[in-house]
Image (cartoon, rainbow, N blue to C red; front, side):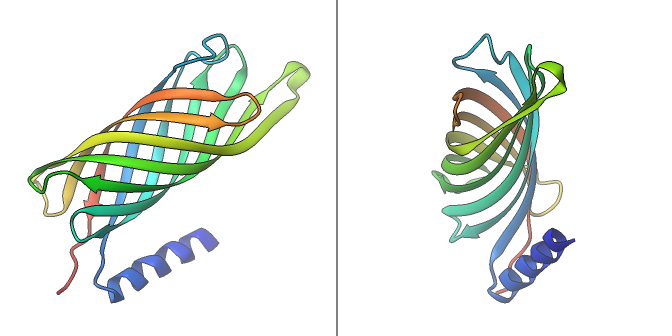
Length: 173
């Protein structure tokens, strides 16, 4: 309940500041760059809220879950991330570069149903393209290619492809 209240407070505050706020939902597929014996591939989802600054940069915070196929049972990585994007062009197709930092929680089941968990930080550089869908004003398709390095005790490096929908609320001027 607290998260919902905080979410609505953020929307109200940014509305008073005439900010360009957006919400997004990304699906992702990820493949390892190392530790092939530990992780095969994974699928996940990101839920994000962001703030567009002068049509050139934006900042967002996201909550993510990534479920990984592995010989280890119930292998999952959850995260809270903060990202900054820089848009290269201002057209209906907007390429961008992105850099993010996150706090990651990796969990899995071990022998005899014992649960294991590791926590740590990670970095997420990425590049993508935002497509104006022109179906509704403010609705965009997001495609993104990313690299994720999770710095837990057993490090994990993943290359991912994300595709999702972003909706930009109109600011009042």
